[in-house]
Length: 109
Image (cartoon, rainbow, N blue to C red; front, side, top):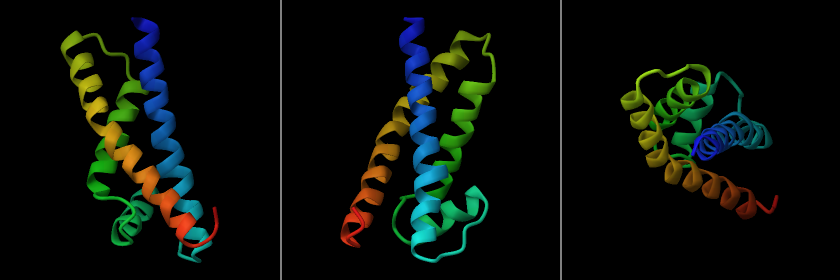
């Protein structure tokens, strides 16, 4: 079970990092948009319709940081974090698909 939990946390973090910290800025750069701090990039991605909510992404990022950087003694907190992470998975996947669709629409894929 510990291996499955570690795998989920690692994949959640990697997906969030890849989409939010790499894919969004790369696509903004390809469109010759200014690249800024993560929150600025997420706000711009929301305005462009690539993500549904920059606030949800920031919350997922906070959760990611908490899951990978903090040791959790309280099993209730751990369970709550894992459940919240599971609820964010569709948001991350939908965003990744929107970005893929955007690159395809522009003939870059």
